[in-house]
Length: 208
Image (cartoon, rainbow, N blue to C red; front, side):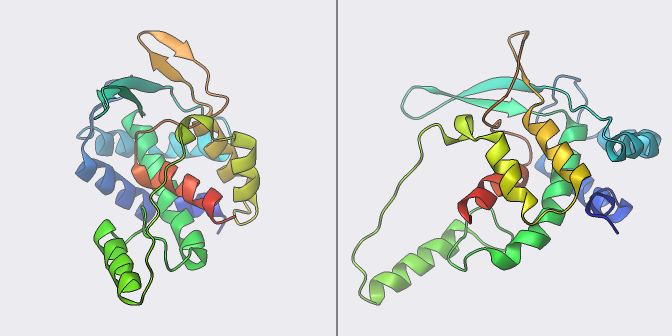
């Protein structure tokens, strides 16, 4: 079975729909709610899958919203339509089975069955073993500057499926609707949607 066939399998899609509904979240630009998405897939699933498999599907732009940060600035978020959130979740579920075995055992962010509490436990264990330094760092505007070509090139090393890579690139370049204005996204990724999808993209960069 090809990778995209696994992603679009009925079992995987049902898991993704369930996850998206559990996460709730606001509608995207088409105003579809998470309560409506299961019915939508029941009506249009086969046609939708055919478009994806033939590289004809074009994701809709994400809706730009802003939330306040502690420093007084605003953080931009991008809210995909619910259907795209389901597909992104489905992609993340399958790609995780590829990448989980090669992640560092000391990596805890955005991984299944791992948490910030587990990371803190490891830090405490290291301190008890005699380590003295803890370094906290962040990459400024990392989400806004991810190079799409570099990301796809890294993914291609382990993801041997052209349809999957084509769809991921389509999501990266879906664009943003901000106050009624459409903006292209040639670099960077939106912060929003299923956290597993984009955060796994960033994690894939970090292991290379």
